[in-house]
Image 1 (tube, rainbow, N blue to C red):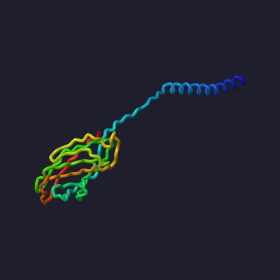
Image 2 (image 1 turned 45 degrees about the horizontal axis):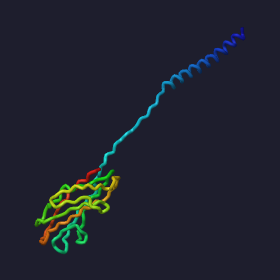
Image 3 (image 1 turned 30 degrees about the vertical axis):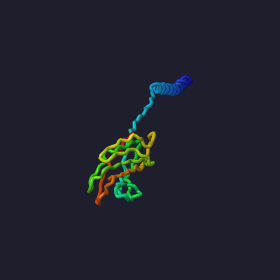
Image 4 (image 1 turned 90 degrees about the vertical axis):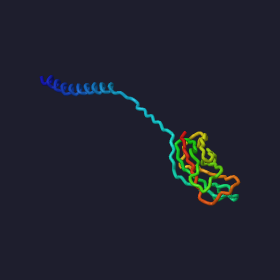
Length: 177
């Protein structure tokens, strides 16, 4: 009797242990078979944009003939400039080139915008506009704080330009591509 009581006692101790392990394995297997996985994708669209930086006004200077007022360095003139940062290419438009104040009207004028490499991008006649089709940089691409220059030449044909202060404005529109 003692043997069978001992066997029952050992079996019940080991049996419960075995039964506990068996139930745990079953629960673990059931949980594993319920697990699912997936992939989360991310998409973002970055549009081309440009940010204007420092704008420097130009200085007009009279040439030796007395007929031409310009930003040409040979006459001590200074081109205006615009610094620009873009995450893609850009074209430029001259939306307005006009006199804002002058003691006399000038016969004709020309405004030219050049890219940082010195290539002409757009031009406009006095009191006119111009739309450029050249993309800088060619083929697109990003650029950071690069200088675009604005040159102005005012030609009074064969009439001397009288003394006084001459002011002209060139309005630019940079168009991201």
